[in-house]
Length: 119
Ligand SMILES: [Mn+2]
Figure 1 (cartoon, rainbow, N blue to C red):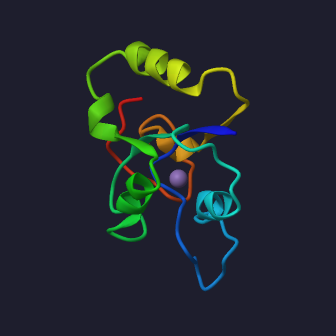
Figure 2: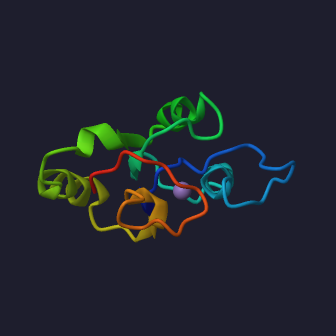
């Protein structure tokens, strides 16, 4: 299926706290298991350091479209979402919206605060 993933973090870590299954690893596991349609994964709002410097590189290497937070600043996201809609076509799409994809000024209760969103 396709994936639209809105988050400050890529959630593609190989391991987290020594575990293969954790809140930072789901999309690595999904990709490994062949659950994600090639060319139909979009991650929006990524920023900060993530958990490893190469987090976003791995995503791009998989063919994921990475839209970092700074590409969302001071503009309507309607054109982006039109592109995403066209990219997904008519296949099933899973939408994952992590609250920390929003700036902590509007959602301060998350445990993994990352400043710098304008979503
Ligand atoms: Mn997150």
